[in-house]
Length: 481
Image 1 (cartoon, rainbow, N blue to C red):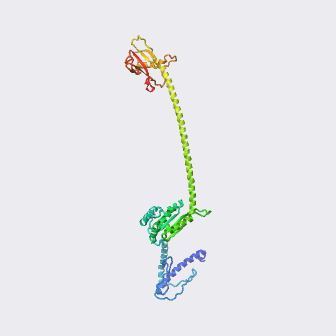
Image 2 (cartoon, rainbow, N blue to C red):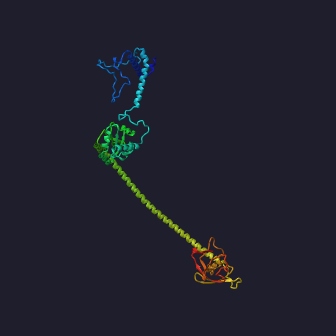
Image 3 (cartoon, one colour):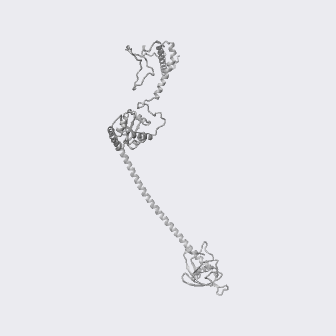
């Protein structure tokens, strides 16, 4: 059984096509070798090769040998029929064809590979010439490119021009979409002669600039020698410069479910006047502006409602803050009143406790005062006359070896001498007594302090007799016991 019988139809077709291609290459090489042996090329028509084509305006034409006189009529060439694969008769081979066949095969394969590579690597730029700076790997900053374009424009054409957006094309597109504005894209090329007149007469026209400002139209411009502007020209499919495109936000038909997108609504290619641009802009605004105006009004209404709600919320929060502040102050006032009341209560209790302790201490002093000595005491006595705080006159004798504080104890406890209650023999715990009076000798005026170490006989003005006045003092000026 033949091996070919085990193959399916697709495999047989593939093998047949491969053999046909190889046979065609072999035949072409053999013909070229035979022709070189038979005579000069002018005796036969020239056959175009795979690489003998010139590109002129997108058409191809075959190359032919030049002739100086009238040529005889030629018969139309007809493609010979190709016998079925595996049964095509072979031509007799010569020594030259056998020797030249490998070189022809290598040439055809190399040329096919080079042609394919050139088609991938080469690209005809939209301006008709190679784009300067295309080999730069680093991306240019859009803001810097826009600033450079503005500086170049003002240097050559003055300061009267549209308000060019100082940023990238994508940023301008996003701003126009967000703010519901029309975007005018201006592209120019330094290689076109109309560029200077367009910039000087059209873009610098006061009429056009006033129209752009009054209608709040965003303008982005660029030179196609820059990377971004060239990419924009490719995206917008511009073929003639100067180029101007009017871009607006387009809303899909009702029920289509699509989202709005920025689209080119009009375009002007080649030199044009400012009046023509204004007319095209007016037509675009009249045709595509109402939907944007409706959306803009709806957005303004939503913004107004949102602002109103924010104002209401702000007023509510402010009112709530005032109420909370009032409540806080009232609560602090109540707490302060409670604290003041508690402080007053504690002060009153402390005062009451102080009064009680003072009374107990006075009763304790009464129990510690020595008995009054007789007038005939061996060591002698001091006869002291007192004028009390209430004006009462009291006379009492004291021993000379008693200290001056004993006199103060007597005066402090004198009002309790007629008290029949149980005596107090111990002072109250934690109490520090203060005398609220002083003893003064009038002539000469001498103040006698309650000194526990000073004896009466050694105190000038007290021995052997003296008249003493009891003078009261403020509590904070009281004397320590």
